[in-house]
Length: 312
Image (cartoon, rainbow, N blue to C red):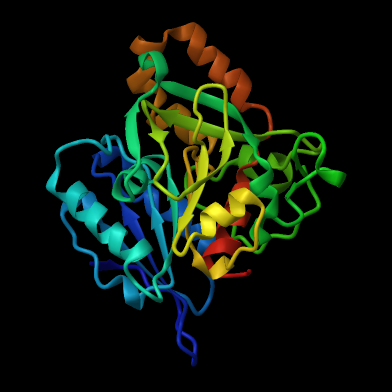
């Protein structure tokens, strides 16, 4: 386990692990800062485990938070490390009485679904989604305490769920490094007007086509039915979806297909070159045009941060 430890406090520190699911050389040193720049706080203890390179995870009972990254792999690949990760996630989410909370993105979203009994397959029509997608929240999303002030249900329950464009507080740290350019500054990236959808950057060839049993789907898009889901124990996700009373501590995983941690510049430099032959210049140009518009990246990451830190 390769440790990346932030300063300790006198009390028991908040303990998290970032599970790096990528092993391509072009991503070396990138995946961890994309998340930990935003999520780590003074006094935390975060470690980085490069699962795709064979590094092993410790006991989930010793952790408060887990972050699962994206990957060029498919969650269905017959790789020993993927099978090991699935078993570890099953224990972490459903088999540990005081287990950690898990936030998953893209490949992480898919491998978590596989681990919990869901199904992952290629995108409809075999298309690779490389775009800024409009993801529509369902009413259950607005019930989450971590989404308060960001995703809101309509008065009286009639009409679409609204995503607030600005005005919510965030304690997220700034992105640093080569991809923290002007287009990703907080003020510039936060949409100014309320919306009926979350606008999220995406790059994926597979999707969750059947969510895990007992999970609650919180958002969908025209191309993907399961863009966001929550999973847990003791029927908490089912109660959320049904509008019943929810024991929030029983929700153990929040999973998102999109890449709220990415910037358009990163996608252009690290992903687009490998896709140009498949996509064509016209579609690549459409990505540039779409990605120039503000996304709800900070909204999604703020919700994830509140969730991981149990601000219920």
